[in-house]
Length: 313
Image (cartoon, rainbow, N blue to C red; front, side, top):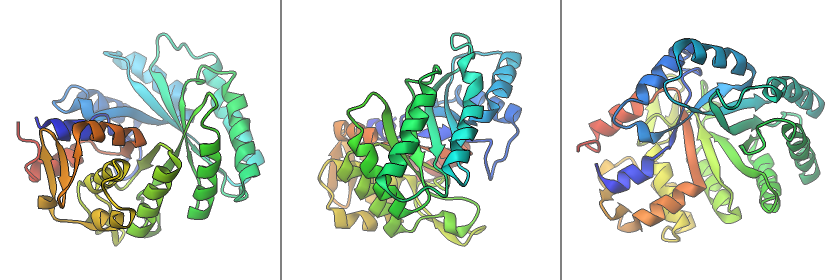
């Protein structure tokens, strides 16, 4: 296998089979993830994504089906309208974790937290929400998790990003989460919006992850929503080349919109796009900026990569 491709995609996909369009039940999702972890490209999988409110049900099914290995989990929580309701919902969701048997269950590594829709777009409000959550987590075994925050608009994200950047010296590992697709067209950010987000995280030195819509290596039209789906190769190349300071900021959108597979070159020594290169070491550094993306299917990205001739041994 090509070393650069392997480094590019290592632990890049969080399995989200419970969510649309797959919409598997929990038992089906567990069985699918278990099978994928036995496949040739298992190293490209990262965490199993689970709503935090379903942790007891999940643990019970895992015990029933037999735990052949310890998985890592990324838990979804938060949302709602007001800050008060958000805090109350988090208290309820986190309650089972105070007594969860961490030695004999799958380890929670990431929390994906949707901030309330009604939160004010100012630094004090975001700081209050983050500190409130940190206090709640301190009483649970989740204190070593990475926290990825999702908010509702570009203006909110910019202020939130500045708050997260200012808190980097504290003990919590903090990052941003971006929704890159969904069931309707408005869930898909434009190429310009995605480019702005990539540049924002780069400029403020913030790690991030994405969710939804990144099933395909290159941009493709989504017939169900009439939206343009982003390509995960485009996104990864953009992050890595920007992190390596070899891609100008104003070139990010050109890279994100590129649908020509011949422009995405993989060598044993690194990657290349339109004559701009990054070494394997730079690929690894770029992946510290962009951690992963959630996908309800692991098979679909692999099928597309195979169709491009990239999975040949």
